[in-house]
Each structure stands twice: as structure tokens, then as C-alpha cells.
Image (tube, rainbow, N blue to C red):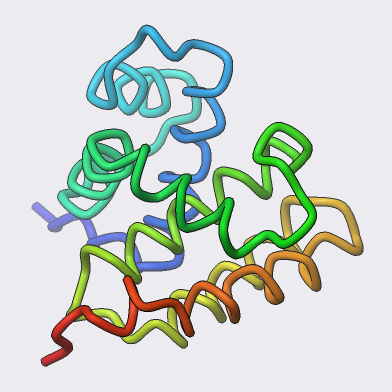
Length: 145
């Protein structure tokens, strides 16, 4: 029997993005429910990081959205596209609650997700918001290993 290869962190982020995007339309569903739907509907695989990060984003949504709101100068959260909002939420979660992930890695991965899944100009917006978020007191206060 061959062991199934673990998914890459980029693949995990794509899966998290799909779950967070789904959450925009069905906020009453829990992260595990949405992840189970992703696996069922799109043939994805279970992954510990996907489960942890989606739970983490939803558990800390108020803090994450506050960071996005303060970093998206001149933009309300509602004005940001659903795809960009999901990407920003994931990246800000990693910056605030995953000290093992360097903020610049989160920013770079978010820009790549934005280039792949959002409007052609969205990546520069995502980059600007996350650059400001990286400079925030909240992110700078996180103890990095």
C-alpha cells in the first residue's frame, strides 16, 4: 500500500481559501462542516493545517477583521471582494496567531493566491493591506521563534 502524500502548505492555503469563501455564503456552518463539504464536493483531502487554520480564523474573526479594517485604509470590509477578504483573513490569522510562520511568507503566499483566484489587480491591494498589517503593533508584538 502506498501512503498518501501530505498536501503542501500552498495546497492547504488554497483549501482554506475555499472554506473561508464558502463561509461568506453560509456563516451559520462551522469550519468542520465547511471543510467536510470541500472534501466531499471537490475531492480534497483532510489536512491538520487546513482544519486548524479555518477553525482559528473563524474563532478570531473579530480580531482579524479589525486588523484588516485598520490596514485597508479607505476601504470598508464590506467593499473588499469576498476572495480578497478570505485571503486577507487567512494571512492575518497567520501573522497574528502562527508565530512559526514569518509574516513575509504569509504576505507572499497571499499575493500568489490573489493572483491565481482574484481580479487581476487585486494582488496589489492585498499586498498593500498586508504590508500595513505587518507593521501594526498587533503583528509586531507576536513573539517569533
